[in-house]
Image (cartoon, rainbow, N blue to C red; front, side, top):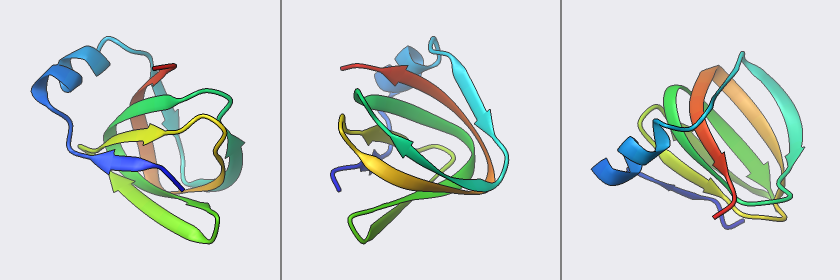
Length: 87
């Protein structure tokens, strides 16, 4: 699983704040990425599981999901994020 989780630069924060917001209450669901998605997590925490690996992320993280990833999301605390599809 090639999901990247890291702290964003100030430039990335500024850029991502122009993108749409998505919110999700705690739940588990499957998802397939037909293109890359970059997210700036504003609130909450979640994890994704794929290929017998699990990675977690929290408020303040920048997360990059690769094109072609099929995974299971588990939102443990309501998520609010800016998101952008494509490179």
